[in-house]
Every structure is written in C-alpha cells, then in structure tokens.
Length: 325
Image (cartoon, rainbow, N blue to C red; front, top):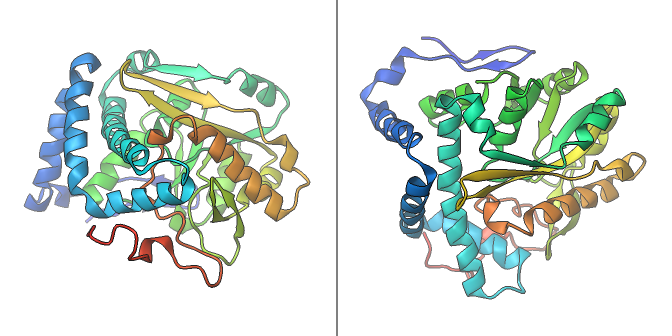
C-alpha cells in the first residue's frame, strides 16, 4: 500500500487503492455532487447552499458551542443575537469556501482569476525589488487556501504548512487541490525547518498565526476583548528567512461570488521588538483583518484553550451553554 510521500523538501500526497473501499464511497458521492455544483452559476448556487448551511448549522452542537464561547470572550459588547447572526453567517461562509476549493480543482485559471479581487498587492512588487523574501501572516479564514493558490497560478512559488485531515481520502483530495498550481506543502509534524528552507529559496511563505501552541513558548497577550497564548514566531521567521511579514486575509462576497483578498502593509515595526511586543502586534493585525468581516473567521477552533494560571479553560465552563453536546 502506498503511503504519503514525505521528505525534508516537501510533502506530496499519493493516491491509495484503499480509497476505493466502501468506507470511502460517501466521500466520493459528496465530492461528485460538489463537482457538478462547481459549474452551476453562483447566483443560483449560493442562495441554495446558504439556506442549506443555515439549516445544517443547527445540528453541529459542539462546533456551535465553541463558536459561541469564542465570540462571547472576544466580543462581549455584542448582544447574544448579534453573535448568533455571526455564527449563522460563518456556517454559510464555510460552505461557500468549500465550494471555492472544489472550483479550484476543476475550473480554469482564467475563470478563477476573474473571481478574485486583490487589495494592496502592489506593495509586493516593492518587497520583491528589495531582494527580500515574503511570509504572509494569514488568520484562519474559511477561504484561507485560495490566495496562496491564486498567487501560485500567477507564477509565484508558494510554500505552506498544514495539518493532515483525519479522513485519508479527504486529506489526499484537499492537498492535491492545494498543489494544483505548484508550490510546496510542509506537514506540521515534520517541523518548521523544511518551511524555512523553502522561503530561503524564494518561495513565498504562508503562516497561520492564531493557533494555540500552549504556554511554554507563547506570550499571553490581548486578543480582541480577551487574551490568548500567542507564539511570536514571525519575529524569528523574519530574521532567519530575511523576509517581510505581510498580513493577508480573504473575504468571500457570496452575493457577487467574488473573493476579496486584503493585503495589509508589512509589519516593519517588529524587527527589533521583544517577544511580548511581537505577539501583541500579531494579534493586532489579526484583529484589523477579522473585525470588519467576523463571519469569515473560523470561530470553531479552540484558540483560547491555554489560559493563565488560575483561569478556567473557556471550553470547559459548564455555565456557558451547558446543554450543547
């Protein structure tokens, strides 16, 4: 049986004969339906999928509870109804973003380029002209993979780190699509050295800053209205990769069927900053990018899990929506 090919250069997904076993037939059926939908005009497809997403969102109790808790901590100034509306639209965004990935697998680059609007990408020319590398700092948006793929389709080599999916067939499909236009994929369990090596070779890096890596190497800094254990890794990456750290965030406009990609100015003020300052600046950039369109963010993640000594982990609080399973 073939295994995923790993090396100290990149991760290459390989197809397995076992993917034809009955336990995967449901995945094949679902993907087949989505491939057909990829050719349906968005004016027809999006309202239909939006209604389906709102309905399905009622039955994902654990994910919905995590989103409620995250928004409760991050946006206490909002009413419960306002937070519920964000969650509902978040599930809609999740479904639309999944369809965007399906389109990436079958539609032509010319078609896909017409579905993207870039904001601020002109500054990348100046960074390239300076001889520096680029590492994009990209919060966990539902369409997070698309900007890297579109840059690869435009001819820019890209490198990114990723977590494997639990379902092996889904993992193979997802990573195969990610590599459609070129670039390198690096599995997180292989460490960060292969990613650093790729960036040094001229690949533009893709770094997600908002995961919870525990307290040992993290800094507790403000994050929206709460705080978060934040790994100040971009400071080290900036130096060892001779790279500009550039915040980026994708926003899908379901009414237009367009993905807006926002690229903020590089974080030039962290070069000589201490670890605490770097961590806070990272979270500030996440806040700037996410706050205007909170429904685009993956609020179901446990990014507030690590707390200061004496504080209760939010997701273990039984007083917050205890009836959710």
